[in-house]
Amino acid sequence: MADSRQLAGLIGPALMAVTVSETINLRIWATHIPSVTYLNGCLLLVGGLAIVRAHNLWMWRWPVLITIIGWLAMAGGLYPMFLPGAQQLGESPITYAVTGTLFAMGCVMTFKSSSRT
Image 1 (cartoon, rainbow, N blue to C red):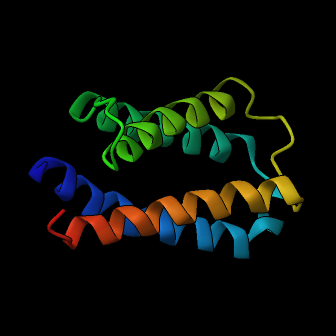
Image 2 (image 1 turned 90 degrees about the vertical axis):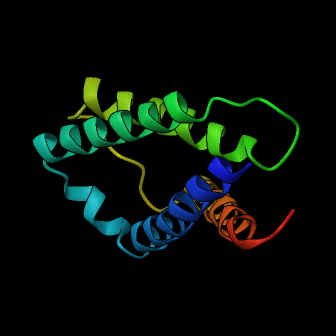
Image 3 (image 1 turned 45 degrees about the vertical axis):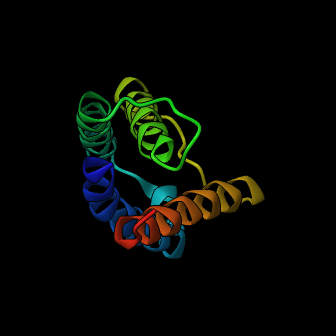
Protein backbone atom coordinates (compact mmCIF):
# COMPACT_ATOMS: atom_id res chain seq x y z
CA MET A 1 0.00 0.00 0.00
CA ALA A 2 2.96 2.34 0.59
CA ASP A 3 3.86 2.19 -3.11
CA SER A 4 0.27 3.05 -4.00
CA ARG A 5 0.38 6.05 -1.67
CA GLN A 6 3.65 7.27 -3.15
CA LEU A 7 2.36 6.98 -6.70
CA ALA A 8 -0.96 8.58 -5.75
CA GLY A 9 0.94 11.47 -4.15
CA LEU A 10 2.69 12.08 -7.46
CA ILE A 11 -0.09 11.30 -9.93
CA GLY A 12 -2.99 12.91 -8.05
CA PRO A 13 -1.75 16.52 -7.92
CA ALA A 14 -0.28 16.25 -11.43
CA LEU A 15 -3.59 14.98 -12.78
CA MET A 16 -5.46 17.81 -11.07
CA ALA A 17 -3.10 20.43 -12.52
CA VAL A 18 -3.22 18.95 -16.03
CA THR A 19 -7.02 18.70 -16.14
CA VAL A 20 -7.55 22.24 -14.85
CA SER A 21 -4.94 23.74 -17.21
CA GLU A 22 -6.28 21.85 -20.23
CA THR A 23 -9.86 22.83 -19.42
CA ILE A 24 -8.87 26.49 -19.12
CA ASN A 25 -6.90 26.31 -22.39
CA LEU A 26 -9.23 24.21 -24.56
CA ARG A 27 -8.99 26.78 -27.33
CA ILE A 28 -5.36 25.87 -28.06
CA TRP A 29 -6.40 22.45 -29.36
CA ALA A 30 -8.43 24.07 -32.15
CA THR A 31 -5.19 25.14 -33.88
CA HIS A 32 -2.86 22.32 -32.98
CA ILE A 33 0.51 21.52 -34.55
CA PRO A 34 0.63 17.82 -35.53
CA SER A 35 4.25 17.36 -34.40
CA VAL A 36 3.44 18.77 -30.95
CA THR A 37 0.33 16.60 -30.79
CA TYR A 38 2.46 13.57 -31.67
CA LEU A 39 4.96 14.46 -28.92
CA ASN A 40 2.11 14.83 -26.43
CA GLY A 41 0.95 11.33 -27.39
CA CYS A 42 4.45 9.90 -26.93
CA LEU A 43 4.75 11.41 -23.47
CA LEU A 44 1.32 10.12 -22.46
CA LEU A 45 2.15 6.63 -23.72
CA VAL A 46 5.48 6.48 -21.87
CA GLY A 47 3.98 7.89 -18.67
CA GLY A 48 1.05 5.48 -18.80
CA LEU A 49 3.33 2.53 -19.53
CA ALA A 50 5.54 3.46 -16.57
CA ILE A 51 2.51 3.58 -14.28
CA VAL A 52 1.15 0.25 -15.49
CA ARG A 53 4.54 -1.47 -15.24
CA ALA A 54 4.99 -0.22 -11.67
CA HIS A 55 1.39 -0.59 -10.50
CA ASN A 56 -0.86 -3.02 -12.38
CA LEU A 57 -3.13 -3.91 -9.48
CA TRP A 58 -6.76 -4.82 -10.12
CA MET A 59 -8.37 -4.90 -6.69
CA TRP A 60 -11.69 -3.35 -5.74
CA ARG A 61 -10.10 -0.57 -3.64
CA TRP A 62 -8.84 2.95 -4.31
CA PRO A 63 -5.39 1.91 -5.70
CA VAL A 64 -7.15 0.63 -8.82
CA LEU A 65 -7.50 4.31 -9.80
CA ILE A 66 -3.73 4.42 -10.35
CA THR A 67 -3.89 1.43 -12.68
CA ILE A 68 -6.88 2.88 -14.56
CA ILE A 69 -5.06 6.20 -15.01
CA GLY A 70 -2.06 4.32 -16.41
CA TRP A 71 -4.17 2.43 -18.95
CA LEU A 72 -6.09 5.58 -19.91
CA ALA A 73 -2.81 7.46 -20.42
CA MET A 74 -1.50 4.68 -22.67
CA ALA A 75 -4.68 4.63 -24.73
CA GLY A 76 -4.84 8.42 -24.76
CA GLY A 77 -1.26 8.52 -25.98
CA LEU A 78 -1.76 6.12 -28.87
CA TYR A 79 -4.54 8.19 -30.46
CA PRO A 80 -2.46 11.33 -31.11
CA MET A 81 0.56 9.23 -32.09
CA PHE A 82 -1.27 7.46 -34.88
CA LEU A 83 -3.57 10.37 -35.84
CA PRO A 84 -1.62 13.56 -35.04
CA GLY A 85 -3.47 15.53 -37.72
CA ALA A 86 -6.93 14.56 -36.46
CA GLN A 87 -9.13 17.19 -34.85
CA GLN A 88 -8.65 17.19 -31.08
CA LEU A 89 -11.51 17.45 -28.64
CA GLY A 90 -12.89 20.95 -28.26
CA GLU A 91 -15.36 22.47 -25.86
CA SER A 92 -18.25 20.06 -25.39
CA PRO A 93 -20.16 18.44 -22.52
CA ILE A 94 -18.19 15.23 -23.10
CA THR A 95 -14.88 17.05 -22.75
CA TYR A 96 -16.00 18.65 -19.50
CA ALA A 97 -17.30 15.32 -18.19
CA VAL A 98 -14.01 13.57 -18.96
CA THR A 99 -11.84 16.30 -17.45
CA GLY A 100 -14.15 16.54 -14.43
CA THR A 101 -13.92 12.79 -13.86
CA LEU A 102 -10.14 12.83 -14.19
CA PHE A 103 -9.94 15.81 -11.81
CA ALA A 104 -12.07 13.93 -9.26
CA MET A 105 -9.79 10.88 -9.59
CA GLY A 106 -6.82 13.16 -8.96
CA CYS A 107 -8.52 14.55 -5.84
CA VAL A 108 -9.19 11.05 -4.49
CA MET A 109 -5.59 9.97 -5.13
CA THR A 110 -4.20 13.14 -3.53
CA PHE A 111 -6.36 12.61 -0.46
CA LYS A 112 -5.56 8.91 -0.21
CA SER A 113 -1.83 9.54 -0.55
CA SER A 114 -1.81 11.29 2.81
CA SER A 115 -4.42 9.25 4.67
CA ARG A 116 -3.78 6.17 6.76
CA THR A 117 -6.45 3.96 5.15
